[in-house]
Image 1 (cartoon, helix red, strand yellow):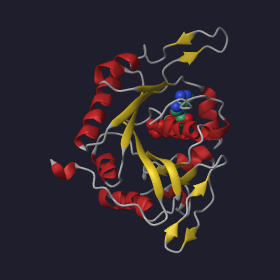
Image 2 (tube, helix red, strand yellow):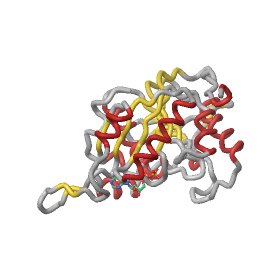
Image 3 (cartoon, helix red, strand yellow):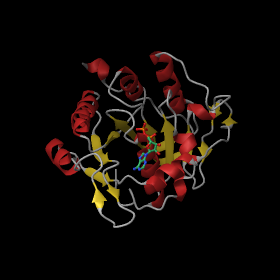
Image 4 (cartoon, helix red, strand yellow):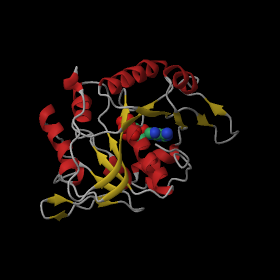
Length: 252
Ligand code: ADP
């Protein structure tokens, strides 16, 4: 029904944001946050001004992946995002908590309220893309979160397991219900390249990406391999040192 639709919150006086793109996954653990980081990095390499709004309030991982520890400053009543090593603007609940391992034990409406404030009360400035790392899944929390931000489009992250196909369909239906276009899909952890012989190993079975993309009529943006180097750099907060051309050719 119409109550499901996203209400378009206006931008505050400091913001001039051209595109707000949500990154969603039908389920957890497919690498949604890592892909959010790679997408932001790719767009940055294309010369765009990029920010990441970490809307995964109960499982925030953006500051950790970028090694951001600085506390956000403020400008009058507005919070200032933290800048990453390459100049990507970041805002996350983890940058505001006294300890980064403090759990956030809030109920749905409060979570949505926090996310909304990352839009209304943060002075992002001028951005070509604000990438939103949404909470995983297709349940109430991701739904409410999506409704609290003026998303222009969605990117769906998936992995090659059979199960993930169904989950992609759920995510697509959810976006449709909210009247938000799906701009594309990304298959993460698609294969592993043997470091000795260079052979591609389909760890989770053969890639479903082309087929799902065709069937659902959704653009396939990237197929990303399992790469221990990426996991290591994410763990060390140095994702921006990852050598990749991912998302350097996509337009959203
Ligand atoms: P999600 O946001 O979907 O829960 P994360 O992005 O936090 O997933 O990733 C989960 C774990 O998998 C992290 O340890 C991350 O470093 C790792 N990971 C994600 N994508 C890849 C990849 N392509 N290759 C290797 N490790 C990956």
